[in-house]
Image (cartoon, rainbow, N blue to C red; front, top):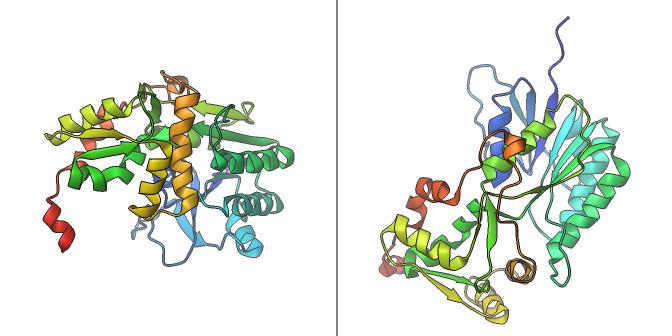
Length: 304
């Protein structure tokens, strides 16, 4: 009798990490069900005319009934929703629906455990969700990356048009990890044959990098001078809210992450080689692949 393939449900399947989880699961011996926030959302892994192990459902994160249907018959679940003030409510809703539907394993993309004197409000949100997960599931793991290389794509506007990076990092270092490597760790945990014994895993990339060093790397791959402009936390917050028009909670989060790296040194070497059985990608690889995103654009294009 053939063994039944496991069914893996992926929340956040259209996000940076979730897309990679979907793509990697697509090559594995399992069934993959991506959960979309709405029926019109773009499929991260396209479904063609040929048989596929990928399917999709749509579910509102505030609908217990829809979430239970999305989890029906699943063996394991990847938990990730967009960072927002509703994240605690939404992710606890998903955990409850998963438990009621008989899901046995949850792999959650979480955040680093922040040490005093630093404070990161979003990490406190994750702590509430993690605590609920640990109190209600036996087979689970919380993955804790510091920062994604792909987060630099949020800075493309000022790099393309002004040749500048803005931050409040000083000469502190940030540890960056490629989202594809994070996805590999998640997939390995989702498909592990035995129950997960490590409930919390810090995911660190291969090096910690200052913003000055990032400016040098970007200068190299774009062929133009990119400068880092160091601001005070207050100046950065004002720029993010007044010029970039970010909501205050998100601007605060970005400022708090810089402050965290200043107050609590981040890892300088990787923690995942043993988890993915190869060396993790380095920042220069990512920048070379995505160099087109940072290329110069003339200021006159802002007028049209």
